[in-house]
Image 1 (cartoon, rainbow, N blue to C red):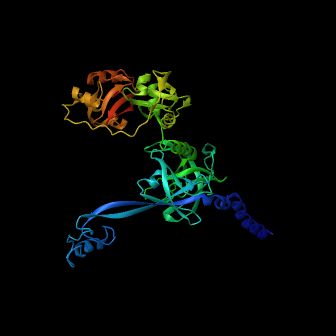
Image 2: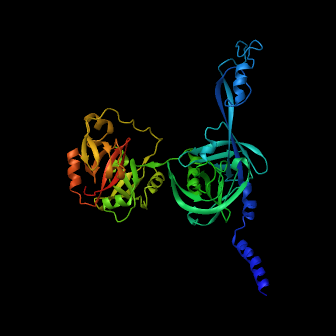
Length: 477
């Protein structure tokens, strides 16, 4: 009796586990035909001596052919010029580089969505459908800031995907990716949503969906499906130390992509708003120094002179809590909210200043192309004066103030102890303490001596052309 009971348990447990796992077969059969393989070709030119076989220049045989292969002149002599219509020494040689990616059809008349980096700089784009047809595609428009590109192929009656709502995605929910990793067409991988609203370096306009779905080179631009067969994201990036999948993949929410698509279709480019501020996150230490109940909002570290925020009355040290009625929970929220605001419109900005909230109306401007950074400071500083919180400091010259575009401040020439632990670096210029301008080294010393032991102050620092706040705890030494 006991033996039969154990055998029943052995067979029952796998059945129960299997019953809990999702079945992706219907989803793939129904919607996989809308996923396409994208191959691109880019032509480049490279100077070579004579006419050589089409082999890579890092191939060991390349040097042999370059030196000993007869050129367009006397047979047996390398690289003798003189025959019209044939390349001579130093004549640029054209070669083609190819890359692969994925995409998916979003309408039956041939609009295809993919990543901008998949088709960037491509001279020719070929889309291969699941029925083996290969069609040339043209770029309707692309947006590098969100890594979205819209393509068009000349075909009708095509299968296409349905969009879902990424807001309804829950962490832990099953999702499926279909794409062409390493060129293996229509490869299906599955996993769960690991997190939502992720921010990546240099990606301020996308709240990424993080998953553990296996994504590799070639998956870029492919769809991320929920279990209802709806596309909720575009697979765009992975976090890896090897170049291959390591369990961290990121997808662009499809609602973000859809907003981009509408603008690319209508005006051929993406129009975004801007207000002319440089921001940084609000840490717990900075929140304490500004009197905020909790870390929230976006801390304004500097303001573009004459920009929308400057004209509206915003100042460095303000913490933006709401923009156009939308809460700014963290600094990553602000670029997305402002970028999605129509240029020329008036928006209400709520800020935290001097331990109270204030509202300012700002007229949103249009975000232009990225501007070049400021050039670094030059010139030898004068002799340093040591002794303020582990920092050696010098007064700024008038020329340095003009170059840095500051009215006052002190230059850090050496740093150690508490200042170094707080994150202050050699070459920083301290311009303010708790939003009070630093007029001299002695002024800085006086302000710091007035702060109670254990309290945190916010030092406004100018570094490499940018301003940022650094929280500094006074330890009484």
